[in-house]
Image: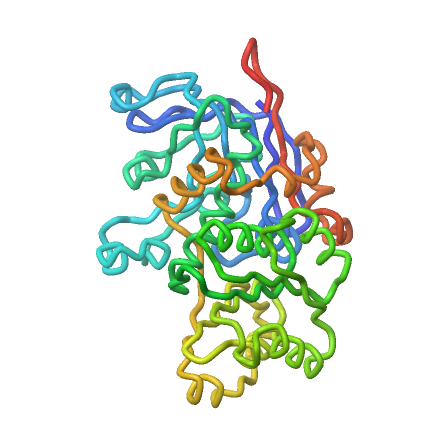
Length: 360
């Protein structure tokens, strides 16, 4: 089989390899689609402390069950279409017991601790199955769409942590794939008004064309003073009940506290590089507005299943997010920072079907 192995920073090689051995209590998936995540881009260009090299990256995976271990034959059948949750929590630590699996003390993930989806076949260990990480897909769902469930699952986790309620207003800072998914999800949950902002007008226009009537409007995030004044104008001087910071910009985190309403919530959804993670915040906004500031990291197998259901029911439209489908041979090009552009949202690596299987 073909696989892409990251040997070192900016050093990816394509190689022929035997198919992985099927665990007696696990599965082997024939990968059909693996979406390129911004985290993959960071790992390729800068490395990651949790990734032991060499490693096959890729954690947004959908495919077909190829082999079933003897102990799993009562649960799965070869040929079933599945999506695989990126993370594998232990189910035993204090945070798993508190039903916060994304904070698991022993958290592992595909593309980090296990070889991921940038290969034709991927082994799935029993631990991933036991936490509900292998979800059966409707056969009508394209594999490319299913591969985006992982990103949507993270948004679901974020909006749950923010305690988004029916009728609330939301401001989303950052018009990339995550911001677009947050807008669609907020609309599906009955948000009262949804505004999306970005410093890049090209990205804002693209997001607006995708979200259409789900958005109440878009705002240009340029001069901070002007932006805050605009926020006050569109909210009747109240601010937004929910502010989702979906970009890696310290200035956006500072701005969010000025834009949030009394008793509202700011979600620092986008992490910052270590070199710029020390941010000066005016904490009087938190004190006098009685607002909450939270963070979001990852998702769970349950979030992944819910994301797949929302995609299957057409409540969330992921198709416009797929800018391009590429073969494995073009993966490295998609991972290079210099090839990112305003118009590229999600690249998805697709593998050709074997025998008479359907396409992606």
